[in-house]
Image 1: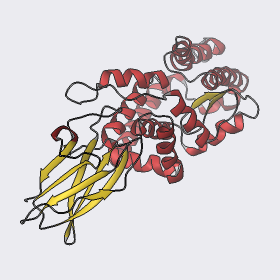
Image 2: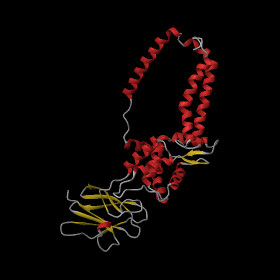
Image 3: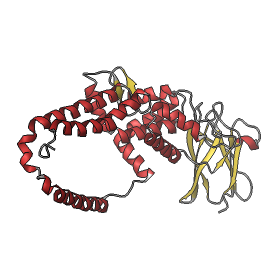
Image 4: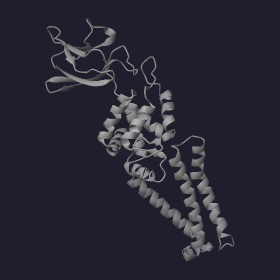
Length: 338
C-alpha cells in the first residue's frame, strides 16, 4: 500500500478492524445478548483476542519495514497472487485427500468417554440418580462438553482460575466463583436439573423441541445442542417390550431392552422401577409355567437388570412380585419362539 502512495497505518487498520469486528466483536455482541455464552471466561477470551489483534496491528506497523524486501513490487503482484491461488488449490486438494472420514456417533462418544475417564462417566450416572434427573441426558451434556472442552483445556481453565476465580469449569462447564473439579461440575450440573425428566407425548416419545429448549439453557450454541441431542438419541435404550404403565421418568415401569442367545440360554436385559417389591420372572416350557424367580432389583430410581432362561422356553413374563396375579398393564409378556 505504501509503494502505491497510500498510508500503511490506514491499510493495517482496514484489515485489522473488520477482522476483529466480524469474529470476536460479533461473538461479544452475541454474548452480551445472552446468545452463546458461558459467562466471564468467554468475555475474557474474546477481549483478550481483541487486544491481541490490536497489538499485532501495532507491531506490524512498527516492524513492516524490516521485511518490506520480501513483499513483491506492485507490477509483480498479479503474478504473486496467481502463484498463491495455485498453491492454495493444491493445498486444499491435498488436505481433502488426507482428511479423515467424519466420525460416527459411537466414535464421538468413545472419544468423549476416553477424555472424561470411566470413573467420571459412572459418576455422572450416580449423581443424576441422587439428584433425581435423567442420567442419559446428563451423560449426553457431559460428552458434548468434553468434545468442545477437552481435558487439556479444562486444566488451563482451572489454572486461569487461580488468577481470575470466576468462570466455567470442569467437564460439565458449570459457571462458578471458584475452580471446580470434573466431579464437582458434574454434581452441580445434576443439581441444576434436579427433578427434570424430558416430557413425553401420549405415545411415549420424547418431545424433542422441549428438550432442545432445556439444553439451550445450559449452552445455546446450536452445534452443542445438536451434539447433545445426537448423543441422547444414541444412548437412550430402545425397549423391545414394555409394560403399559409408566414411571416417574415417563418411561414404562418395566422395560425389556435386549434378548440374545448366550450358550444354551437366553440372556435378557432390561430396566425397571419397583420401589416396594422385586421384579419376578417366569417362563413357559412345554409342560407349563416354571416357578417364578425374583430378580434382585429394588429402589425408587430406575435400575438395570438381567436374567437367563433356557432355550427351550417359549414364553416369558416379568411382573411385580407383590402382585397376586398377572396384571396385563403392569407386566411384560412376550414369545421366545424364534
